[in-house]
Amino acid sequence: MKPLTLAGLQRTLSPWLPAPRVWVAFSGGLDSTVLLHLLAAWHEPETEPKAIPQFEPGASAAYAAYHSCDLADSPAAGNPSQPTAAPAAGNLSQPTASPARSPLRRSLPLAAIHVDHGLHPDSPAWAEHCRQVCAALGVPLTLRRLALHRRPGESLEALAREGRYALLRELAGPGDLVLTAQHRDDQAETLLLALLRGSGIKGLAAMPMVAPLGGARLLRPLLECSRAQLLAWAQARKLRWLEDPSNADPAFDRNFLRARVLPVLAERWPACATSLARTAAHCAEAQGLIEGLAAAELAHLGGSRPGTLSLRRLAALEPALLAAVLRHWIAGLGLPPPDSRHLGRIRDELLTARPDRQPLVAWPGAEARRYRDDLYVMAPLPAVPVYSFRPLAPQECFGGTRCSFSSSLPPGGGGLGRGGLNAYMPATPLPAVPTMPLPAVPATPAPVTMPEGDDDRLASLEPIATALTLKWRRGDLLLPAGLGRLRLIGQEGGVGQDPETRWPGGLEVRFTGEGLSCRPLGQGHHRRLKHLFQEAGIPPWLRPYVPRLFAGDRLIAVGDRWRCTADTAAPGEDWLLLWQGGIRDHPGFG
Image 1 (spheres, one colour):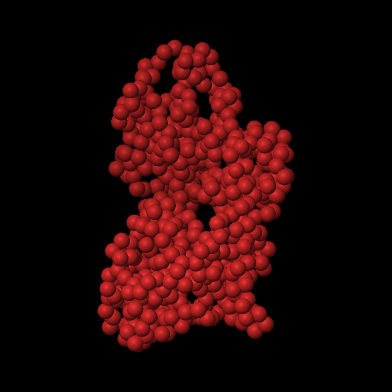
Image 2: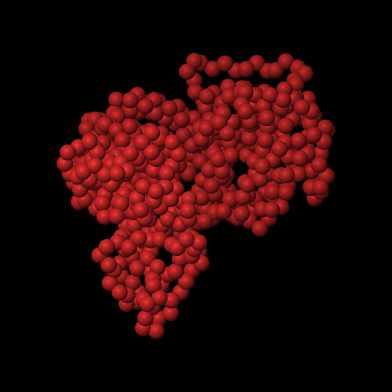
């Protein structure tokens, strides 16, 4: 077996250097311990480096790296009698001397990140171990703890992995490198898991050596080294690392493969891990070709709105190319990919639907809709803001029923603007039927307002569900359910203005009433909102989220798209409404 050396690590990193910062994902386990020590012990070589293997033009980085677990040792790292060691077993309080600074360390700010998943009672001790190792090596360490909330049937492995990478994505800055320490045996396990799950070419490509991570780049420089090589390197230097007991639990699929399946395969085929990793590299090459073809085709499939695709053009594609294009497009939107079943539903239900139909195909974290000739894929839309809480008056507590009061608002909704509480909306619509007899809900929507000086209190007794009306008097209005923010400004722009300075009592904001009429500024007659929405090309499933602004009983604006004027010129028309952020940025609004 070829010894683990350092020159290959330098070759692996060099295409992405210099970088503002290099992060090492440091769990304290064997793999990340070796990676961290390799980087920290990188010295100026005293001898000529080994010749760099040459690869044929066009060979992929993943395939080339398969042949090059060749990381050249520095003199200090290559002498087991002078180890760069972590603290000795049982004595974590004694740090070792920091290695000499190298050109890499001077030009490449090295830092480590340890993620505590909070899944084991010893995790604080593991974090302390990582802190001491990094202190001994002179590497800055960032500690982060995840708060995982597992839903029934959800994979704990997948949940922890997604949380970990989300944190790394948040922490790493633009241009940074994030190094993780997966090795060849990990790659073999990943490929087997993908095969058993029926994955396609992308899944069979397993873990790429290089992948985007937000504005940073994820790199797996040890991916073509075996665990046996890492173990031999660490033992020769008397390093100390952590063993997570959960890694021995066969209830986890990966652990089962590692402990019970791969050893049996290796008895018959000793190079099975190497062969499986080679297969993953071949699949990665094929996936690269597929993505290139999909990207080239995607350039000709744009819809009438930015961020959409033409249904007519998509329908002309062969099924396999259509699936590749949709996967590539959805990945570029940063949304979870649909599985084969949902891709088939997009093809069968959205591409072939009549123009007057509004089919919906949804999968966890995303949904696909159509309008006219445009295909939209987006994060799931929030609940339509139709209902509001109306605090009950004391006289509504009757029949011996006690009223209860809450000193804080439930989570999930509400809008705070300058001047206190503007409105509150629940995260989901309230049921229409209360659990006790209540007076009939008035036909006129009841505004949700709070008296001055009492912004943080909301009285409730099995609240009555009414059409949501927001009272807007001062400052900006933060709309509920992530719908954005409203701001009133003068005709010439400038700072925000208070609605109550123009309209006594302020404005009301509602989200219902497509049958309302508006006389758009500059036009001579009233138009129904439905017709205005149709002319503007706003899909029907977005229209309930457009705020309607009222001054008393008069509709004065529909979002920031139309200002509605009276039959005669009305005072105070020299104003503009800004609707910013949230759902306003949806491509359906143009």
